[in-house]
Image (cartoon, one colour):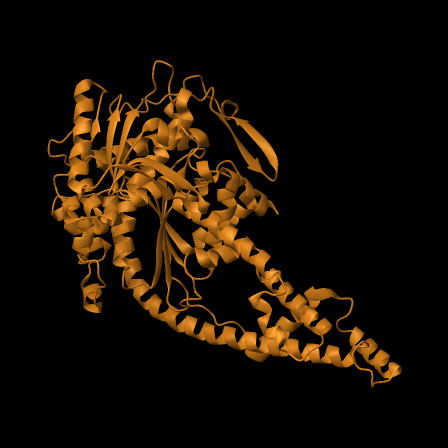
Length: 607
């Protein structure tokens, strides 16, 4: 019940999922996706041949090529990670073939077991109909009474659970045990500082798995949590639908030559089996989260998860259950985070569940610290373009340049500037005040001053390759909720390879430094609520450690909330800096899907 309460609580607040969460998103760094794609040998959009995949360089070769071309600065930590990823890629080629063979055997076993299970059910139903007092009028009363007493030692009174277990034991003898999956190669858990290259290296690996691994997904934290919510809703809805006697799940029973009461018993047994197998909803969600195996049961599975974090109780429970399930069933995980696994849950939320996840991660992943202290985004060459798409401060001159860029880009893409409404997840919609063929324009208050969140920002990022945002203020504690929403917005625009044009009151470096009204990060007044098992827990961070009114950097490290907030601010600054560089702008033109739908003029270097 705790998971359902948490899910309902999360659903009520998912419109502002990330605006109320501490956004500790792992960085995505150099180089551009377009450049990575060309170096991988996948320049076209169509399917690549087997020979293309065979020639595609692995992460280590790709990394060294980028260093030799001057696109990356050599870093020993990054090279070590690239080498580990390269070794994992080689092992995956054999693992893919082993998993194809395993799933072929598993498919046969599951079908045979289901066929035998239904046969056993029909035999039991035949016995019940033959022995039932209300059915067979030809048999004598004493004969029926003796038979019922003899059978009473087996089933009546012991309940569906024992009946279900007895049937499962019979199936084990008839069909044999479930096929044993091959041992999966260990994945990688990468953690380190902002701009250290974790996500860049993970993306090199993910690109190299194309054509090698059949089932692969790449998720960022916000997308993963939203998809989990969506799958949980679908599972619960499907369960409600399956409770109906008319459900297609029971259609095989309707044609059997049994009395109505016997069919009712069969449906009851089927319902119990479904409820037992779906007792833990996260198992059902995990099976849909990565691969719909109803469509294809063969092959290995890879999950690249950018920014593992545990921001609240729901995240701890959901991620622990789903990742544990995926790792147990042979999925290979490559993940990034700003924290080591053991430091993810310093608040101790749902400790037993979290410890199980740590055990699974330790068993199935090698932890690697990307230990550089440099933020490599700040070292990206700008070719003298220090204010290409970020205009500040707000003066008549910067406003004129901002407006001129809006006119220039909308003229290039063509079409009328109109107001449209686009769909968001969970049946919601958001209005886009000014839209023109992949380009959209907003002010800060519209995007960050209202109760919107990651789902809205993802919808915008997927539909528009270029986003204009004006009236961006310097952030202080007075507008900390808006600041968190803005950070989430930057995360999603960056993760979806969008171009961002800003008109702001301060420089990027000063955006989160506070104002005369006070700092943005103020531990004295920073308190928050979380929900656990139906109770409210209010935590005063000042009570946790020796922290003064103006916290030192060492004090921040000791406090989860402070560490997460400061990391989020540093990451947003780092990403905003990279989003002004030519390499990032090149990535937009190659990676954002809406460019494939626009006229060739959209991809002009002039924008």
